[in-house]
Structures are given as structure tokens and as C-alpha cells.
Image 1: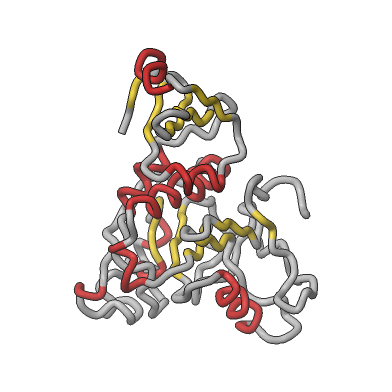
Image 2: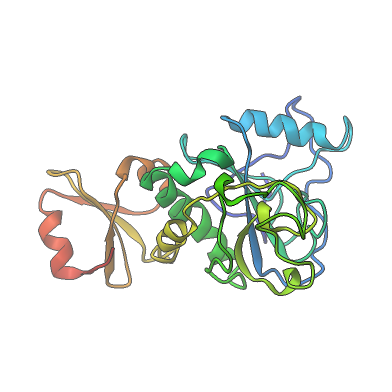
Length: 265
């Protein structure tokens, strides 16, 4: 395990390949611009193991593979980190070093628009929120729409790909974008995922030291609480699977929360 700048707590570090051999290089390449962009991908598979095998194979047997910063599985609530956020990773055809953090989400572009609210909430609270906290130079906005298969030709580079940002605009496009927006690429992932719901969950999550989870042991209701505000959780099980902070439980918490906290949705 590596500690120090760029490695996020709570994420499992994957520092070996599928054969158990140490990955090299582990620390990525230098960023050549200020880090102001977060690029979302889908793995086009069902498990992290399939994604790992693809990373390991992509650049040759002895190379250590080609990895994003993070791979996450919202169904199994798994979070892996491959490269520190202080460096560039390797998941685009060009421009990896242009101030970009990259996340591969286990799943498929053609179904991402149908992901249930619990998946979007987990991606926002357990993945995007801690990354944005670690890299505050990335604004919590989606500057362009995320398009699905019904939008026309997407699997083509700029200017034919309908979702592509122009090469001139790409360097000054900041916030959360998708693989489908990268000018030289021909992939259309992550599809029409609900980026607004993901960012809403992320921006309503306080990652500071005063954050805690509140539980009503009678009703099973859960809230995230911090800084005088509390937000109810739609999928407590998914949240608790990845939560390692303080938790307060009471049989009367449903009465305590609205009396002590401003409720937000």
C-alpha cells in the first residue's frame, strides 16, 4: 500500500496485475496542465476483473498495463485506485496528460441511462465526492450533455461524433465529461447516464471531519449529516457498504434529525 499525496483513503490500491506481478509504472505520467477535468468511462463489462484483464493486456505483457485513475463497481460497491490523482493516467487516445482524472465504471454505455437512483447516489457520494474533495480544482458541473445511442453517430472522432467537443474547446472545458466527449476518441461511453443525479449526490455530501451517518434503528431510515444539514439516503445498504466514518444510531432518530438539522434532498 502506498500512502501520501494523490492516494485516496477508502479506495483499494491495485498495484499488481492479474498475475500478481508488480505493476510498473505505478505512478502515472506528469500532468501537463492544471487538473480541471474528470472523464467518466464505462468498462463495457460486468466485473472489475474483466476490466483489469483489459488494462493489463492493452500495452503488452511486461509493460504494467494501461490504467485509469479509478475503477469502481456500483453494484458490488467496490472502489479501486490505480494511479494517484497527482499524476496522469492512460485511458484516452490522446490528451491523458491534459489535467484529467479518469474513472472507469463497471457497466455498459447502452444501459447507463437506466441505472437506478441507488447506483447514481453511490457514484456521487462514494466516488465523485471524495475525488472532488481531493482535487478541488475540478468544478462540480457537467458542461455538456451526455448522449445515448438514440442521439445518432457517437462512435466516431470529432467532427463526426455527435457528442465530441472540438479540439479547440477541449483544453478549456472544465468539470465532469465523458469518454464520448474527447475529440480524438471513437468510443461513446458512458452513454446517457444521469450525470445531474450523480453530481447532486456528490455536492450534497460533506467529506469533512464532522460528517456522520445517522440511523433510526426502529424505521431503518438513514441520513448523511454534516454542517447543520442532513440528507436522507435512498439506499442505506449501498452507502453503509462503503462508509467507514462515524455512525450514530437511535430508536428516535427520525425525531432528532429534523429538530437538529436542516433537511435537504
